[in-house]
Length: 116
Length: 109
Image (spheres, each protein chain N blue to C red):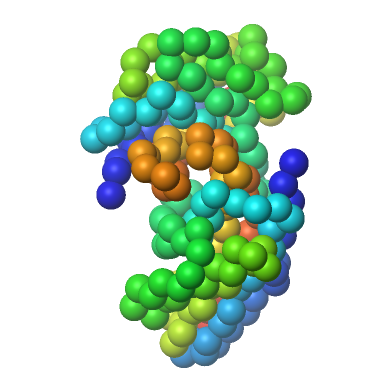
């Protein structure tokens, strides 16, 4: 099946710094990618929809200036957590859908962000 | 938006037992997937099953789209089956995945 690669797998950063997370579709093109966040013992919640060549669409309650999304090519979307704070510590996962009439969603390995 | 409910929230089994996990959804869906989240957080795709029945080894899944539910069967459970199982639905062809709250399965030796 298709592969979505996410990097880094984990990152520790100091409060106030920015962190960039990459999401790549390795063997297919994805005009749309999705970013999710998961807090401990909770489900995955959609943060934003990343659209190639245009602005991302953010879910209600997600600060677009804090979580910058760039989807500059058909195989790469990036999420930058700006001025990170300890409450931003979470597990971030991206996904992209394949092609076809009922495309399957493929997920990256996830990035565990710890802000100290 | 669409509601996705999973049951039971927690399940404790003895190794070798069988189990059934359920996923109910409140609207018609374009796609449904079952995942197993491993201890490192990675989502392992178990089934892509918008309708019908599929089997993969000790696991099988059935989705009855007209009645808006899906079932995941685990037979002869093993300790390595422990973890959180999520179902996720997609409404439209290009749409986002909406996850249920998951079922936490613990298989004891």
